[in-house]
Image 1 (tube, rainbow, N blue to C red):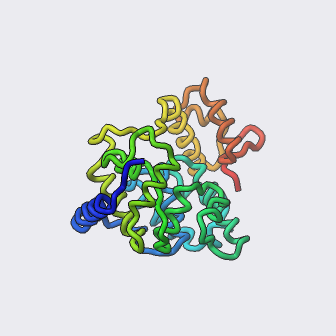
Image 2: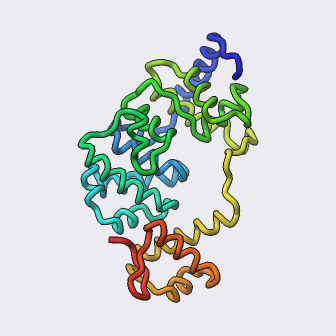
Image 3: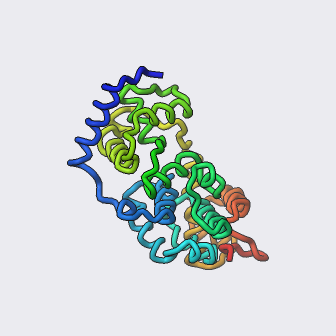
Length: 268
């Protein structure tokens, strides 16, 4: 691990906060400390750009303003609201997580408890507690990892556990919420992937991107059409016939669609 002297840590914190004071972004999920709303925003932001998430965030919390509303909603309606964000499994995970929280009768307040919820991993569990409760925790996403590397606190080979350890040492106590918002903005606006040349640990292949696109088209089509045959899906979604079988099977296995006789539809 890089030697982190107190002066080096203080200088870095001062640099980030000085910049952020001028350039902080105005984002809707920063206006709330409701852990449920924070959870929605964090799950959306896992695989979707900020600009695309803003409109959907508003739409989602308007449609499902409480955990109970989401838990009791038909999956088809959740998928309909989510449609357009991509990675539709996240909508199913949020729905299941809402039901888990209802069973618990309270929102989890520890990372290990949150990680028992569907779709919530180490980064997201900590983010929810940071942004909802300002807990003195550190977390590392792609943006923060890139900053740590660009600022010479880590290298591209640094393991995840060590990245979290470094992030903990850099954390200004009592200001976790502001600190992580500042880092997110700095990574998104200054130390971008294009500017630094630092790539994320995992990158999607062209085949993965194509499959994700086709899967999203099918789910979106079924939110509008309600039900359709394989032949209709091929024609209306313009999907190659040699790919459709595998795509439909993967969507069935993920619980994103169901098959009734010769038709495909969204789960109830």
